[in-house]
Image (tube, rainbow over all chains, first blue to last red):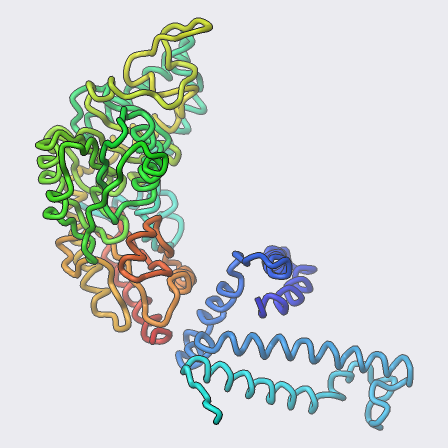
Length: 152
Length: 402
């Protein structure tokens, strides 16, 4: 389900220009809708995306194997990164409207540098992604290896 | 001399695409001869059979009944009337389950290897309390247990419903032995021939089969078309479970007189194009020769089974001896979901099936709860295709398997 959220936004935008992506966007929407209404998702979009991506990476076996085996973690990272950049972008736009600068604390981010909104927060976004990735990776590895912590 | 490459020229889809079609247990490709026969019906003589008297209707009736004759001859039925058109194998089995006169407490024996079509109709009757359903448990390789069968069958057994060739393991049931034991105990035998009739010669008289169900679309014919073979006297005893146009000779407001066998079972307008296409498919297969098809498929089975057995991380379902199998392998790759393997193969233009293959109990029995991947071949597949398939599958198993 996680990757479907990103897929819905990405494919919806892409489907403006290409009808090829409209069906995928529809499938992503159906998946989110079913999950949100507490019904089992039978769209299998996540599986399709996972195998499609893996198949494209088969020329680099180690990368294909890593992607296939850690797809859940990767999709979580993409989803969190997607929402983080969404929040930061909204924050930047808010600052731009209210203070005339996307980042009032930075001298390099002026009114005319609208396109650099994301760049203003590049370090924060990257570090956030890395931290979340490490946490998720550790979580899934612990779960996968069935490691249990005993606290006395 | 059997030449698969020459045969492929007859199949428009195989000719114009580079798809490796290994999903033949699901449905087969259609040769031009079959497509042409169907198109001819729609473009040259579209009409109803057996009703109107005009030229077009006469031609339709003639072609429709000629197809029945071809199918009867194909399985060596004694009479043309022993062939009842159905829409598929499932409907043929349901015709028996609904039309057979069971008394309370009558026993039906089937196996844990059955396709849903050969299991659910009996489950339904058992749930209604009409029959007592018993199972012969095939082993994990899908091999029929004759001893278990001998122990379970008795004089209360009215019917044995059995799959001839499995759509999961590719194994064949020892039908001659089963039929002999069943008949010795006064039971009739219904054979699900969906995976058998298309792949090797089936002689209903030699095997002494009472009822045989099979589909056209698994043997180069059109979808939505199948048939039930039944010994004439047994068909006469069967009650139709659908009545309507063409099933009666006379009717008033209170009663009706049934039409003769097989027409009493064929209610309403029939799938004329389908039946004519079925006849053309039978002609096509007969021209190639079922023995030739069987021999060639054995060669394919050898290559296929030996090839997949060399792949690491692969669990093969059913026997490892290719001689015991049809040209069909079901398997799983350790650490991968069956659907993932199928989608990855599809990316390489190889069409296989993944899932439960309508055999839920058997998959659960062998511990494959998520199903399996199935590659099923037909006589138009080539040895080169198998090599490519094995190569791609090896790569997938090596890279993504555990």
